[in-house]
Image (cartoon, rainbow, N blue to C red; front, side):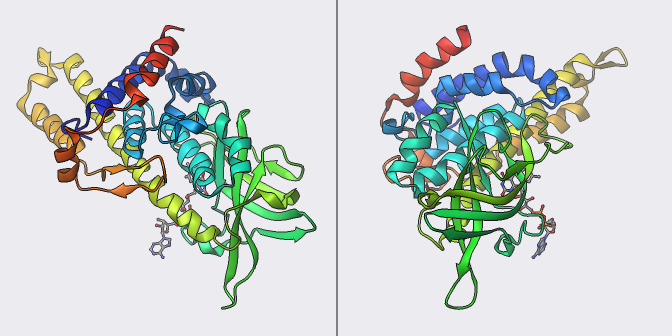
Length: 348
Ligand SMILES: Cc1cc2nc3c(=O)[nH]c(=O)nc-3n(C[C@H](O)[C@H](O)[C@H](O)COP(=O)(O)OP(=O)(O)OC[C@H]3O[C@@H](n4cnc5c(N)ncnc54)[C@H](O)[C@@H]3O)c2cc1C
C-alpha cells in the first residue's frame, strides 16, 4: 500500500516493521523455511514489539491501534516472508479477534493477554475435509453432556494449531438443528492439549513453509460448557464476520508479497550482467520492473480502520483516508510504546 496519505503514526509503524523484517526476519528465515520450522524466536520478538496486540485495547495489553495498522504490519512482513505474515495474521485475525469480539470477560481474561502479547498463538478451526468453501457443510458435532461439550469430528488445514505455544483452537461444530431444519452451528473454544484432540503431523506445503498447518481430529473431546464462544447457534455468522476481516489482512499480505517480488527483481537486475552491463540498464527490463512496481504500488487493499472500543472495522475510501490522515490524532501505539519496545527487541 502506498505510504502516501498515511498518518504519521501509521508511517512510523510501517518504518519500524520494515526495519524489523529486513534486519531480524530476513537473515534467519531462509534456514527455517528450508527446514519447515515454525519461527518461534521471530514470533517472540514480534510479541515484544507489540505487533500481536496492534488492534487491541490497552486494557488487554494491546497497543490500542487500528486494523489498518495491523494490515500495514502484515504487508511489511510479507515483503520479506509470507509464512511469518500468515502466522501473525492467523494468530491475530483467527485466534484473538473472535475471542475479543465474541468472548465473555472470563474467556478474555483467561486467554487474551498471552495471545495479545504473542506469548501464545490461537487457531480457528472451520475447514473440514468435506467442508472448505462450503463452510456450512460442517460435520463436526458438539453435544452438551451436563456442564461439558463433547466434540467429535475432524478439521483440515488449521493454521497455528500444533505449535508449542498454541493455547486455544476455536472450532465450529453442529450443536443442534434450527427451527427451519438447518444446522445449528456454534463456535467452541478447545484448549490445546485437551484429551481426545489429536493434532496430525504438519502438512508439507509448497509455500508458507514456516507457517504451522495441521489436520485435527476430535474424539470425545470434553470442554466446559462455558467454552461456548458467543451465542449458541451464531457460529456461522461469527466466522463469516471473522473471515471478512481476515480477507482484508490476507490481501495486505498479497500486496506485501508483490512488493517483495519487485524488490528481488530490482536487486537481481542490478547484479546480473549480460552483454557487458547489468540487465537493469536495458530499457525492456527497466520497463517491466516499472510496470510491476506500478501494479504493486497501486494495489487496492481496502483501507480500513478499527476503533479499539467496539472493534468493528469500518471500510473507508482511500480519498477519505487521504483527507483525514493529516489531521489524524496522535496516539501512543507507535510513537512511544511500540518504538521503545522495538528498539529493545532489536538490540537483544
Ligand atoms: C495454508 C492454508 C492454511 C489454512 N488455514 C486455515 C485455518 O486456519 N482455518 C480454517 O478453518 N481453514 C484454513 N484453511 C482452509 C481454507 O480456508 C480452505 O482451503 C478454503 O476454504 C477452500 O476450501 P477447500 O480447500 O476445501 O477447497 P474447495 O472448497 O474444495 O474448493 C476447490 C476449488 O473449487 C472452487 N469452488 C468451490 N465451490 C465453488 C462454487 N460454488 N463455485 C465456483 N467454484 C467453487 C474453489 O474456489 C476452489 O478453487 C487453510 C488452507 C490453507 C491452504
